[in-house]
Length: 160
Image (cartoon, rainbow, N blue to C red; front, side, top):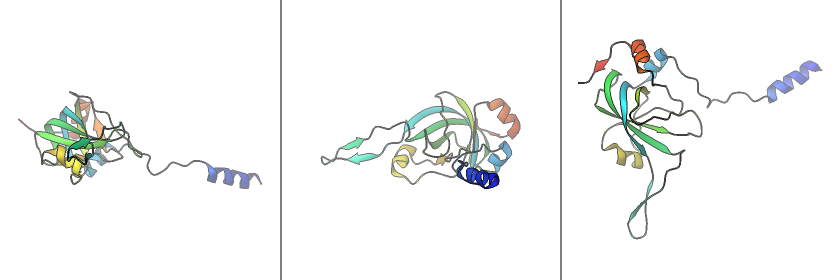
Protein backbone atom coordinates (compact mmCIF):
# COMPACT_ATOMS: atom_id res chain seq x y z
CA UNK A 1 0.00 0.00 0.00
CA UNK A 2 2.79 2.42 0.90
CA UNK A 3 4.60 1.60 -2.33
CA UNK A 4 1.46 2.34 -4.38
CA UNK A 5 1.02 5.69 -2.60
CA UNK A 6 4.69 6.55 -3.11
CA UNK A 7 4.49 5.77 -6.82
CA UNK A 8 1.32 7.83 -7.16
CA UNK A 9 2.95 10.74 -5.31
CA UNK A 10 6.10 10.62 -7.43
CA UNK A 11 4.16 10.49 -10.68
CA UNK A 12 2.14 13.55 -9.62
CA UNK A 13 5.24 15.49 -8.51
CA UNK A 14 6.26 18.40 -10.65
CA UNK A 15 9.10 17.26 -12.88
CA UNK A 16 11.48 19.63 -14.64
CA UNK A 17 10.15 20.72 -18.02
CA UNK A 18 12.24 20.69 -21.15
CA UNK A 19 12.24 24.49 -21.30
CA UNK A 20 14.50 24.71 -18.23
CA UNK A 21 17.96 25.70 -19.34
CA UNK A 22 21.19 24.15 -18.20
CA UNK A 23 24.33 26.17 -18.78
CA UNK A 24 26.68 24.45 -21.17
CA UNK A 25 30.34 23.97 -20.45
CA UNK A 26 32.71 26.27 -22.29
CA UNK A 27 33.86 23.40 -24.51
CA UNK A 28 30.30 22.33 -25.48
CA UNK A 29 29.19 25.94 -26.03
CA UNK A 30 32.18 26.52 -28.33
CA UNK A 31 31.33 23.41 -30.35
CA UNK A 32 27.65 24.42 -30.72
CA UNK A 33 28.25 28.12 -31.43
CA UNK A 34 28.23 29.81 -34.83
CA UNK A 35 30.20 32.86 -33.70
CA UNK A 36 32.19 33.41 -30.50
CA UNK A 37 33.56 36.90 -29.86
CA UNK A 38 34.61 39.44 -27.25
CA UNK A 39 33.06 42.86 -27.53
CA UNK A 40 31.79 45.98 -25.83
CA UNK A 41 28.08 46.91 -25.91
CA UNK A 42 27.66 50.09 -27.98
CA UNK A 43 23.89 50.04 -28.57
CA UNK A 44 20.76 48.44 -27.09
CA UNK A 45 17.60 48.62 -29.22
CA UNK A 46 14.06 47.43 -28.66
CA UNK A 47 12.75 45.52 -31.66
CA UNK A 48 9.22 46.79 -32.26
CA UNK A 49 6.57 46.00 -34.81
CA UNK A 50 5.75 48.87 -37.15
CA UNK A 51 2.12 49.27 -38.05
CA UNK A 52 0.74 51.51 -40.79
CA UNK A 53 -2.30 53.59 -39.88
CA UNK A 54 -5.00 54.72 -42.35
CA UNK A 55 -3.15 57.99 -43.03
CA UNK A 56 -0.11 55.96 -44.18
CA UNK A 57 1.95 57.16 -41.24
CA UNK A 58 4.03 54.56 -39.49
CA UNK A 59 3.36 54.01 -35.80
CA UNK A 60 5.73 52.16 -33.57
CA UNK A 61 4.27 50.09 -30.77
CA UNK A 62 5.97 50.61 -27.42
CA UNK A 63 8.10 47.68 -26.39
CA UNK A 64 7.40 45.78 -23.20
CA UNK A 65 10.23 44.22 -21.13
CA UNK A 66 9.40 40.80 -22.57
CA UNK A 67 9.82 41.87 -26.17
CA UNK A 68 12.91 41.28 -28.26
CA UNK A 69 16.03 43.36 -28.12
CA UNK A 70 18.99 43.79 -30.44
CA UNK A 71 22.40 44.42 -28.90
CA UNK A 72 25.24 45.87 -30.98
CA UNK A 73 28.81 45.14 -29.93
CA UNK A 74 32.14 46.63 -30.99
CA UNK A 75 34.07 43.38 -31.28
CA UNK A 76 37.82 43.09 -30.83
CA UNK A 77 38.49 39.35 -30.68
CA UNK A 78 37.01 36.22 -32.28
CA UNK A 79 37.40 32.53 -31.60
CA UNK A 80 34.84 31.23 -34.09
CA UNK A 81 32.94 32.52 -37.10
CA UNK A 82 33.38 35.57 -39.33
CA UNK A 83 35.26 38.47 -37.73
CA UNK A 84 33.56 41.84 -38.15
CA UNK A 85 34.01 45.03 -36.14
CA UNK A 86 30.28 45.37 -35.36
CA UNK A 87 28.34 42.30 -34.22
CA UNK A 88 24.59 42.38 -33.66
CA UNK A 89 22.89 39.89 -31.34
CA UNK A 90 19.17 39.20 -30.89
CA UNK A 91 17.54 38.04 -27.65
CA UNK A 92 14.41 38.34 -25.54
CA UNK A 93 14.70 40.22 -22.25
CA UNK A 94 12.27 37.85 -20.53
CA UNK A 95 11.36 34.99 -22.84
CA UNK A 96 8.27 32.92 -22.00
CA UNK A 97 10.56 29.88 -21.90
CA UNK A 98 14.29 29.57 -21.49
CA UNK A 99 16.69 32.15 -20.12
CA UNK A 100 17.86 35.66 -20.90
CA UNK A 101 20.71 38.03 -20.18
CA UNK A 102 20.70 41.73 -19.41
CA UNK A 103 23.55 43.54 -21.14
CA UNK A 104 24.82 46.87 -19.81
CA UNK A 105 25.88 49.69 -22.15
CA UNK A 106 29.68 49.87 -22.20
CA UNK A 107 29.97 46.40 -20.68
CA UNK A 108 32.50 43.96 -22.11
CA UNK A 109 31.39 40.37 -22.74
CA UNK A 110 32.35 37.14 -24.44
CA UNK A 111 29.28 35.93 -26.34
CA UNK A 112 28.58 32.53 -27.90
CA UNK A 113 25.93 32.85 -30.62
CA UNK A 114 23.82 30.47 -32.63
CA UNK A 115 22.82 30.95 -36.27
CA UNK A 116 21.62 34.13 -37.90
CA UNK A 117 18.30 35.61 -36.79
CA UNK A 118 17.65 37.73 -39.91
CA UNK A 119 14.43 37.26 -41.85
CA UNK A 120 11.98 39.01 -39.53
CA UNK A 121 10.93 42.48 -40.74
CA UNK A 122 11.37 44.52 -37.54
CA UNK A 123 14.77 42.97 -36.92
CA UNK A 124 15.89 43.41 -40.52
CA UNK A 125 15.05 47.14 -40.35
CA UNK A 126 17.47 47.56 -37.43
CA UNK A 127 20.20 45.33 -38.84
CA UNK A 128 21.29 47.78 -41.57
CA UNK A 129 21.83 44.84 -43.93
CA UNK A 130 24.29 43.12 -41.61
CA UNK A 131 23.85 39.67 -40.04
CA UNK A 132 22.14 39.49 -36.65
CA UNK A 133 23.04 36.47 -34.55
CA UNK A 134 20.71 34.68 -32.17
CA UNK A 135 21.72 33.59 -28.67
CA UNK A 136 18.77 31.20 -28.45
CA UNK A 137 16.06 30.78 -25.85
CA UNK A 138 18.45 28.72 -23.77
CA UNK A 139 21.53 30.91 -24.08
CA UNK A 140 24.69 28.99 -24.99
CA UNK A 141 27.07 31.06 -22.92
CA UNK A 142 27.67 34.75 -22.14
CA UNK A 143 30.48 35.87 -19.86
CA UNK A 144 31.37 39.22 -18.34
CA UNK A 145 34.55 37.74 -16.78
CA UNK A 146 36.35 38.20 -20.09
CA UNK A 147 39.88 37.60 -18.78
CA UNK A 148 39.05 34.19 -17.29
CA UNK A 149 36.92 33.15 -20.29
CA UNK A 150 39.63 34.28 -22.74
CA UNK A 151 42.11 32.01 -20.96
CA UNK A 152 39.72 29.07 -21.39
CA UNK A 153 39.25 29.86 -25.09
CA UNK A 154 42.93 30.37 -25.84
CA UNK A 155 44.34 32.57 -28.56
CA UNK A 156 41.70 34.14 -30.80
CA UNK A 157 41.80 36.38 -33.87
CA UNK A 158 42.27 39.99 -32.82
CA UNK A 159 40.80 42.85 -34.85
CA UNK A 160 42.92 45.95 -35.15
